[in-house]
Amino acid sequence: MERVGDGNVQAELILMNLIGKSPEDVLKIGRHIRKHAKYDGHTPLVVMSEKYDENLDGTDVKAGEHDWITYLEDADQLRNLLARLTEKV
Image (cartoon, rainbow, N blue to C red; front, top):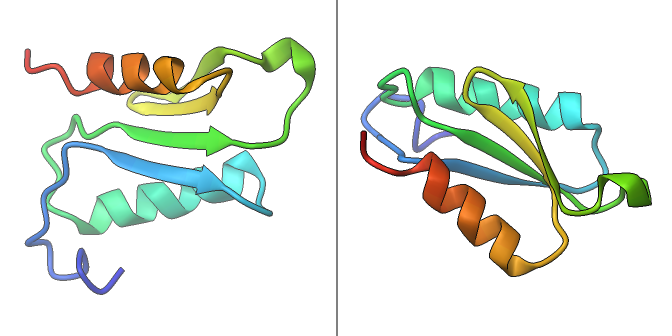
């Protein structure tokens, strides 16, 4: 939070791990970080969930305009999602 607090840090992506918190709590923290960073209006926020129902395995769920929760099946899924979200338009 200290690094982004002055608005001088610009990120192409915010990637967070969901450990011991609800997806909503982690999204709230990530949105707070994005709000205080130099934000271009398109910086994606990705939350990686570690515990979830089997039916979510391998899915990426859009949780806001630029917010995602990913239920990872493998590393390729994460690489593909990040590549898609950070492509220059």
